[in-house]
Length: 156
Image (cartoon, rainbow, N blue to C red; front, top):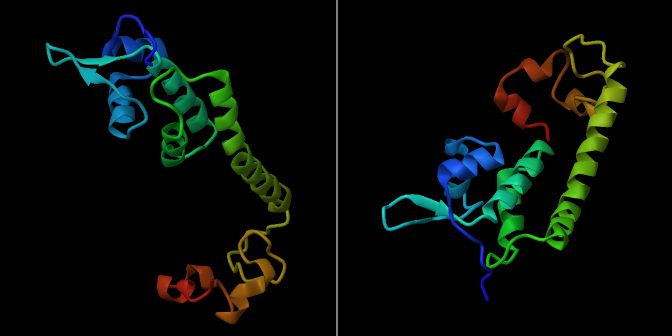
């Protein structure tokens, strides 16, 4: 059973109320993040629940969640009703682990950055940022990361 969503919104009304541009509304629709339809006058119309979806997309994007991941998560939810607090809890739980990994990685980068002397050689034994375990020593001496792509691709 579909809920009564009231008077449909124009693309301009959706943009104003959600704080994005009309182009962004069209972009989100083209990416399958939101859905609309055309009325008898061939104008785009949206149910009011699209405002909550756009809010979720904006929050997720701000947290660094890729659009493809956002779309996959939204696709798992019923489209016949507005998103609920339970839906949001499910989405945010899915993204929490990814965000915690990113936070851990950025914290490590921040904490180890002071040890980088910025010499350019990037093949020092003790360079956890760009050369963990001195793996670039197998390629050669000096600034091996500045060499051709072919040589870099052999070190993985």
